[in-house]
Image (cartoon, rainbow, N blue to C red; front, side, top):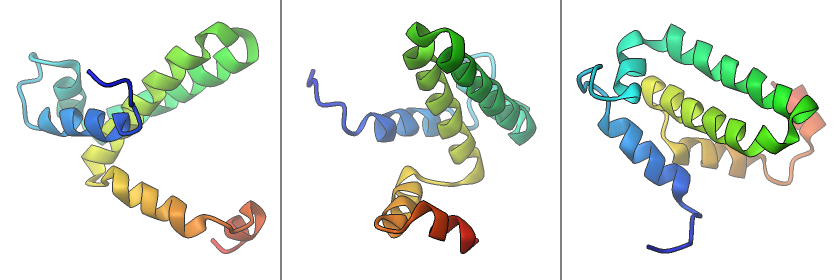
Length: 106
C-alpha cells in the first residue's frame, strides 16, 4: 500500500458513490443516502460545528473532526450529483483571484 494519499478524497468518493442505492442496513453511507438530502445536510452542519468546537477548545480533535466533515461533505456531493473534479475545477477557476473580489462577484 502506498503512502501517497494525494487522491484519498477521490478514492473515498468512489466508495461513497458505490453505496448509493445499497441496503440502508448494510452501511452507514447507504443509511445516509436513504435518509436523503435534509439528513445529509444536517450531518454536514453537525460535523462543521464539531470541527469548529475542536478548533476552539479541543485542538487534539481537529484532525478527526475534519475527517468526519470531509466524509459527510463527500456524501452531500454524491447526493447532489457533484463530482470532486467539479469542485477542483471551481477552485482552479478562482486561483489567483482575490477572495474579496471573488466574493463580491457573486
